[in-house]
Image 1 (tube, rainbow, N blue to C red):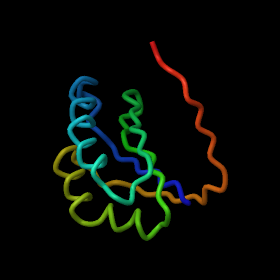
Image 2: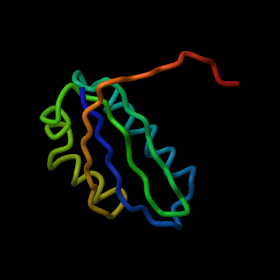
Image 3: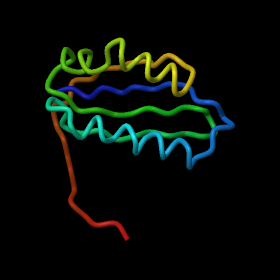
Image 4: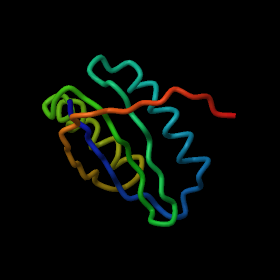
Length: 100
């Protein structure tokens, strides 16, 4: 299993509500992806960075999902080029708890 971290720059003037709405819209795509185990969205308004942390079976699966169409979508939506990092994920801890 691998973890992929994807980050890209966003306009610091883009309001949080807009960023979250764009994330929620794209979540539909990722929920339907047959090879994706998990995705967590990232947002740092002070640094002007957004992205996601993905869990996949392989780097090949991640790269297949983040091909030219994905890169074009990020460029069109956020005006930047995504950066990709890959890590082996030998252990996963997931606690089940409810948020208020």
